[in-house]
Amino acid sequence: MHAADQKRLLSDVEAFCQEIREHEELCYVEHRFNHHLVPLAGKFNILGMPVPVEYGGRGADAVTYARAIARIGQEGTGVRTFFSGHTSIGQYPIMTWGSEEQKRRYLPPSCTGEKILAFGLTEPDAGSNPLEMTTTYERQGDKFVLNGVKYLISNAGIASTIVVFAKPKTGGRISAFIIDTDSPGIAREDLLAKMGMPTANTGMFELTNFETPANNLLGPEGDGFRIAMGTLVSGRLSVASGCLGVIEDCLIEALRYAKERQQHGKAIGKHQLVQEHLTAIEMHRLSTDALVYQAAQAKEDSNIDPGNSDKKAKADLLAAQAKLFAAQAAWDAADRAVQVFGGRGWSTLYRPGRHLQDVRVCRIYEGTDEILKLKIAAALLGKEYEAFK
Ligand SMILES: Cc1cc2nc3c(=O)[nH]c(=O)nc-3n(C[C@H](O)[C@H](O)[C@H](O)COP(=O)(O)OP(=O)(O)OC[C@H]3O[C@@H](n4cnc5c(N)ncnc54)[C@H](O)[C@@H]3O)c2cc1C
Image 1 (tube, rainbow, N blue to C red):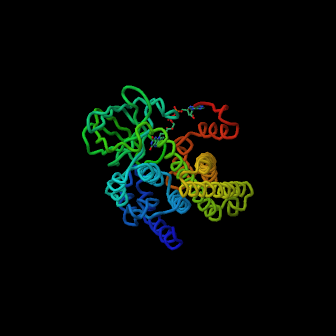
Image 2: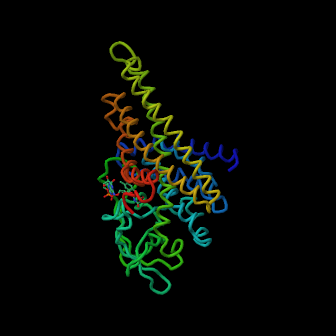
Image 3: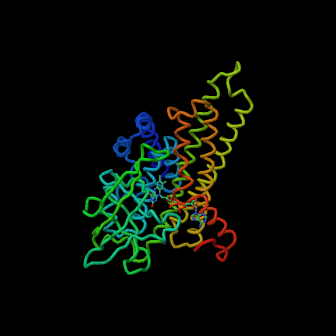
């Protein structure tokens, strides 16, 4: 991506962030989905940032996209999660494994907002281990018939297209499919009893004899697990970038409040124990920033040289490391910002409290802390030490 295009994209993201803020704050307090999100993202043409220009996107490289997502992360993990679901794990598998016809059919409308995307891997009884999924598919002539339930899916209730994963009814390896939610045989439900992200859509859906055309198989049959794991590299990078944004916003807010708020006759920023919180948030920002952009550069190097397995492995590991670190750092940064705000920090009328509620999920989705630690340890120790296969 040329420097001028990078600059234009980041300035569009900045304008989007400035416009979305007031809507997001109101929707958050009223605990409802932010309906301004998709139209505003469409207005600033940021619904397909890394999608190649020939398919209607902005052609952003991985580092520029990480910068954009970090900026969006400042506006809240709910806003950022929409982009991760739509782009990092929605458009990404179609861009990477889709046929030319699938790319032409799905990517351009997803860049305008005509189609919203989601990624359906998790099931009620298959989370950390997707191989335990029970959703099945069966080939019937020129179509596949799918049955099963997908649970805790970002954008599920607003998506027109979902990349879903299923096993053959007769047993065997997982395959990936693109499904259109306006077809019969899908029942969707929004999940509303959430700890955070009230402005984002999280849902579940059940497929009952759901038919999708044979040419909606994504990638080769039996390659679904590889596609899912490859997509999670992109997803983890977006979560890590979003967490960086959360830390940046916590720092901005905590610094401002520490100068404004007076107690014991002086600004609270003059109390040394408050300064300790500010220093800790700044150290989280610095270290997360270094790790996120190192991981993003590794992803870009791998994207440019897709046949290079060493670069792929490096990008995979660094995305996991960045996500594990960033999610924990963002959680601690939000907690400290809440502490600096005192009683107001505990209120969702202020940004730190909202960040704290929302960012907790980053230690769970796209690989829990525990799963990522095991992955990192296995990379250090070698394959024979893998805690699970
Ligand atoms: C808001 C939200 C949005 C989401 N969006 C999506 C989405 O868009 N698409 C999608 O497919 N999924 C999505 N998910 C699902 C998410 O990826 C899963 O929740 C996550 O992978 C964990 O699975 P689980 O909830 O079933 O927990 P489990 O796998 O049941 O884990 C429970 C606990 O056991 C631990 N554990 C499990 N196995 C091991 C092990 N071998 N060793 C040590 N500890 C272990 C876990 O770390 C965790 O602490 C979303 C989840 C949430 C909450």
